[in-house]
Every structure is written in C-alpha cells, then in structure tokens.
Image (cartoon, rainbow, N blue to C red; front, side, top):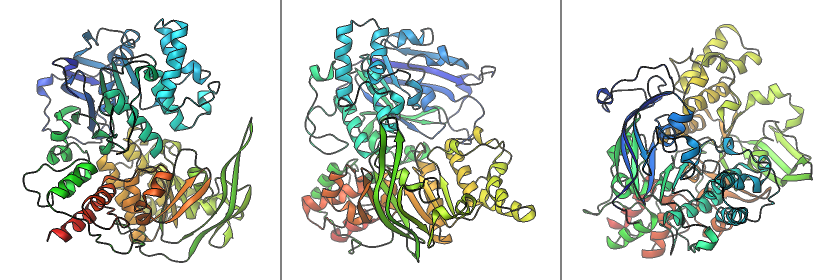
Length: 629
C-alpha cells in the first residue's frame, strides 16, 4: 500500500493512569531504559507515548500483556479521556480532530472500534438491530441502512445467519464477527481492532483476516497473505463502501501482524520501535525487548547461510529464498508417526487413562435439543499430550468437560482408570482430573493467591504443615512465589492463569485439561506457560489434554491431535501426519504454522518430502541444512 504524506493519528507525550488521583510525571522524566516489572500494576499505563499512524496504512501494535496496547487504542476514539476519566496528559490528534477535547459520540462518526471485550459492545435484541444501531444513530436513511446491514453481514460471513436471532445466542466467534459487522456498517475512516481474532477458530480467523486484508488494500487481488489461497476481492456494491482509509490492529499473534505494512512495538507504555513491517519484524533485539515473538521464519533463516538476504517473513518468501540458495527439504524426522513432540512431551506413555465409547451429548434449547457430541469413541493413555482442535461449535470443550464429570453423556460411556466417571464423586474425580478454564477469572474467587491455591487441597482434607507445603510448592512451580498475599484480580492475565493452574497443581492431579491455554497471553507469557505444561508432562508424568485453536501450540507440544467437526472426531492420530496432509487441513479449515507451511512449500517448489513437515524452528533449520552441507 502506498502511504499518503499525511497522518491519521498523532500522539505526543501521552501519559495516562487509571488512577484519577495519581500525580503524573513529566514525559521527559520517563525513561525507556528504566527497569520495571513487566507485570507490574502501579503507575501510569501510558508513559509518554509519541507515535504517528500514517494515513492509508495498516498499522499493527504489539507488546507485552499489560503494556498499554488496549489503553492506547482507546485514545483514538476519545474513550480516553472522555469516557474513562483517569489521570491524563498529552496531545492526541485523530483525523484532524483533537481527541482529548472531543466526545466519544462525535468521534464515532469517523472512528470505528472493535474492543477486546467484544461482548460488551453487544446489546441489540437481534442480529439486524445490532448492525443497524450505529447507522441509525448517524442518521443514515432507512433504505441505506438495509443495504448496509446486508453488506456488513456478507463482509464477515454472517449473511446466512437468521437475522432475528438474539446476539446472546451466538457462539463466541459469531459474536466477534457481528461486532466487526456493526462497526463496519458505520463506514469508519479509521478502523481500530483490539485482538479481533481472539475467540475465532482457524476458519473464522482466516475469513476475518482476509476481510481485513481486503479492506486495507493488501489482499485485493491474487492470494491472501495470511492463507496463501486465492481470494477474490469484494466489489464496492458487495462491500458497501471502499473500506476505511486506515486500519490499526492490536494482536499477540505474530503471523497476523505480518499482514500489516507499518508496525509499532510498545514496551512499558512507550513506543520502543516503529517502522515498516519488514524492518521491525526482522529486528530481533527490538522484538525480544518488547516481549514480542520473533517470526519463526526469521528465527530459522537467521541461522542459515543466506548471505546478506533479509530473512523471510512468510512461507512464500521462505520458498523463494530456499530456491535462490539451493536449499531443499530433508526431514530430520523420517518417521511421520514419531510419537514425541518437539517439546519432548508425550514420550512416556502408559496404560489406558480414559476410554470413551459412543459418547453422545445434547444441549436442551427452546428450539429442541442440539447435539454437541455425536458418537465419539477414543482412548487416552497416561502420560499422553493430546490436542483437540476444530472450528467453533465443533464440540471440543463439550467433549473435554466429560473427562472430569462437568458433563455426563446422554448415551455412551466415559471411563477413567476403568471406572465410569459418573460413579466418582465430584471431589474424587476433581482431585485426579484438573480443569483449567479458558478465562481464569471463571475459577478464581479468593482474596489472596495463597487462599486461592489452598482452596482445592483444603476441600480434599489436607491441613496443617502438609497443606502449607503443597500450596507453597504449587505456587513456586508456577513462579508466583513472592505474590502469595497479592489479590489475584490485581495480577496480569498471564499471572491469573498461573494462579488457576497452581490451584489445580496443589491437588496433585493425574490429568490436567486446558481450554485454550494461551489465549490473551503475550509471547513471553505463552512460552513460560507452555514450558510449564511441558515440564509437568515430561517430569511428573501428568496427562495433558489441550483444547486449542493455536496451531503453533499443537505443533510444539502435542504429538497426537484429534480433529472435531460437527460433534464428531474426523481425525485422531499423529500431529506430524496431520500437518503433512493438505487435504485434511483444507477439509477441516486448519491453518498450519508458518514453519510447517514453509517446509511443505519448499519441498513442493525445490524438492523434498512433503508428508513429514517441520514442526519447530529447530527442525526446519536442521532439514534445510541437511542438503546445504
């Protein structure tokens, strides 16, 4: 995209604290070199932000969780300081308006925003009413509103949805897309997106990001950068307007960030690095300092001898570089059914842990029963690391909740250690099979970290020194020692997730079920959390079952993957074999990680084995070096 010589948003010396009584320092006194706790809660969130958003750009903002990204976005449409009135100082100019002196209602005519907490934006009584609300408040004529509703729902792939349905009845992914449609129907000049794919499955993510690409002008012809697949552009009539002039997006997913043409890295509430995407995402020192993941292909090709050529960001670019330097793909792991994941998980597998036979589960609704799990049979052995993947509504979480008795099957059998789960008391099965929810706030309720972690073992009868020892060991295992007396809700999401895990670990479980373990965590938090999960499996023999949309997590930590579709298991086997089969991936709308896709593309382009792809950066480097030696 060619940038105009103008600026959509300009921020100068912006300081903000949610504590309205806080005395703010001068911007000049705030140093980027100051050593601060990245998970700390005290002091200003924004600490002297200076940045420009080029007009016509697709700008991505990345950084550590709790580092001020969402707070920064709220200054673009005057939510801060007009609606959220903390302590504020600085200058914010957006589309020629002083955003510090303009009301949110006025900015809404030109700045559309999809919040990270997208459900807070839903309040209509129907899908139609939800999308119509914004244009109605802008005074758009009724006939034009009807056209906007049609175009907006088509834009996000919800045009076949029953428009009389209440938004509350939709899945999380559908709700997120509905908010996107509602904002788009207002035809904003600046579109602001705060983690717009956080609750979307791979298919929904692909569709939404392809939409963002087309709106941004980066995917109007040829193949979409994110998917590598042919994607026709939308006509003006189909889209309803030419799209926003400028898009700003916050994400933790580096492969999504590579769609942008301009990047900003935040560190401790300040801009640490900004510039063209190619430059920013090949600056590994800046990425590390900002707690942003280095793109896996940059990491891999930086270890290879490719002269002065810049490391590639995408699988297509990686294939081109490999061809230019005569690299071919030789799988370092010949056996595609190799049982161990790159993280070393799933190596020590024992006897049968769970045995599911013809499991059926239905939800009762006003419109009759909805079958969420349909005739599922599978066996899980002690010490396994299993991923369950599939689109939103495929039955993943519903199936997982059968493992600890949160659901009982309508028919069929779920056995744990040879005994029906329904025959266990909730305390007995809860002690052996821990469940970590996607949102840690759904299982945290105590006033201190110590009380939260102690709750489970206390209810199982532990007391005295044994209770204290087990609680402290669990807290230390998740690296929260020193925070025992802290309020869990004052901690970052990554820390709260570890609190929830510590509460499970304190009961010494045989099995832990994780529902989306990495959602909402920055690169450092994801790595730390999954390294801990891997350690529990490798060293303590804990059986791990993960419900996840993160294909990187699947590739790195799960040697076995079960794919669900419409309540049934359509694939159950080797993760490596799954990622080596394009037909299975396409049929189930699964987008492989960049390292996987790069090894397959290189093999297709310049020669090599495609059925045993790389599952990690280390494997990709080893497989490319094999031929180059």
